[in-house]
Image 1 (cartoon, rainbow, N blue to C red):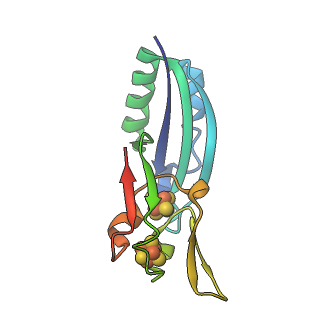
Image 2 (cartoon, rainbow, N blue to C red; image 1 turned 90 degrees about the vertical axis):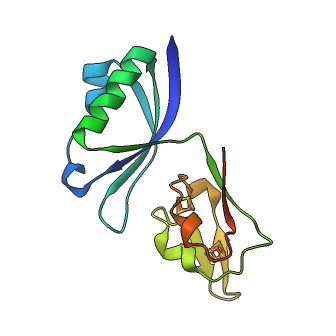
Length: 136
Ligand code: SF4
Ligand code: SF4
């Protein structure tokens, strides 16, 4: 059975320049599409991938990534902002690794760009009025 899944990979600093994702193709017969790739403020790598292949190859590929030290998160959830709860306090701006929040200097309002969000959930605990919500 062929599966297609979207996952978030968190690479520790020591793995950032290693060809780990390339080996998914070479050794595990998987196809992948990089949807987003960036470095966080802690110099960790973060990559959102769409992976396609046979279920058994997918399972082997995930085991290989985990054994290599990559942290994997399924991207089956979505993070949204409850606009009525947001007080525009700015606490989320520094915790978001993808820069999904931006302060608008003139109005001092915090804009949320959900196209940049990789659903890492870091803003959820950081938001004092609990305006950031996780949906499955
Ligand atoms: S931390 Fe929460 S309340 Fe503060 S700006 Fe971000 S989303 Fe709004
Ligand atoms: S879940 Fe929150 S902190 Fe994580 S990428 Fe999305 S907006 Fe940024």
